[in-house]
Length: 427
Image (cartoon, rainbow, N blue to C red):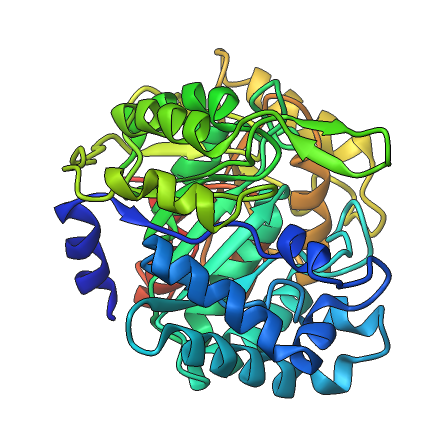
C-alpha cells in the first residue's frame, strides 16, 4: 500500500487496528525480565494465536512485534547483532498470521536513550538507528510503519527522518499523553500533530497511558487542526492493582466499545486497543468500523517549538540576528548566547514571536550547540537564515519543531533540505 492508497483507504470509513500485544503475551507466559522480541521469536505459536484472534475479531492492521527491535534497545539485552534477523523474522511471523486478510505494520518505538541536549545521543545517530530498523521492516514486506508510544517529539522527528530515508511506506505516529494532555517531555497533542503532519506523517494520534474516556478530549482537539487521519488506541480504561499484584483495567469490552463510539464522533479514523485489551475488545468495537469518517482538511500553517505552536500568518518574525562574531565564537554555549539574541531582538523595537538567527559564519558544532541551547529556553520559536546547506541542515535537525527559514542565496539545495524538515520558507 502506497501513501496515496493509504490516505484514500482511511477516508472511506473507520478501520480497526489490533489490541494489546505485551499484556496478552505476559498472560500467556512471557516473563517480565526478557527481551520481548527475542522471546516471541522462540515462541511463535503464542503470537500467531493472538494475532489470528485479532483478525477474527475484525482487525484490519496487525502490528508486528518489532516494538523494541531497534539496535539501541536490543543492545541493552546484548542482542544488537540480531537486529536485522529479529525484524525480518517478526514481520514474517505477523504476515503468516495475517495470511492476506490484514495489513502488517512494522512497529517502532523509543530507543531508551536520550537525545542531546538531555542526553549524549546525537540526532544524526538516532536518525540512523531508526533508518536501519525501517529498512529491515520494509525489506521484510511490512505494508506500513507505526511509530508508537512515543513521549519525545524530538525522537518522533528522528523516526520520521529515518523512515523517510529508508522507504516511502505510510507512516503512522502515535504518542502517549499524561492526564494533563502533555507528554512527559511537555509536548501537547496539537503541537505534536502540527509538527509531524508538516514533516509528512500519514496519520497521527495517541495510544497507551489512558483509557478512552481520558483521550476523548485529545482526539476532539486534534480534529480541529488535522490534515491527516487520527488514531485512537487507548488502554482498557484506567489501571488498578489487584490483591495478587496483577494489574487489571476498569472497563470491560462493552463499556470500552461505548466510549470508543464517542471517540469516533470526535474525529478518529483508526481505532484499536492498547494495554489490557484483548480480541474480545476488538470484536466489541468491530461494529464501528463501517462508520463514515470526518474529512480532515486543516489549512493553516504553524510554526512549532517542542512545547508550543503559533499560526505562521500571525507570527511576528524578527529581522536576522547575526550570531557569528557576537557570541565570542562560542565553543561552550551558555546563557550568554541567549542574552546576545534577546538584546538584538529588543533592539528591533517590538516583541517578536520568532527569532530569525543568522547562521552564516558559524561552524557546525557552534550551530548545533546554539540551537540546542536556545530551544531549552521557554517561549522561544526559532527561524534560520543561512546560505550554507550543511549549516542549515545542522540547525534544522536539532530544532525540535517546525522552523521558519530564509534562503539568502536562492540556492535550491537549501529549499530541498528545508522541505525534509517541514520548515516554512519566509517570503
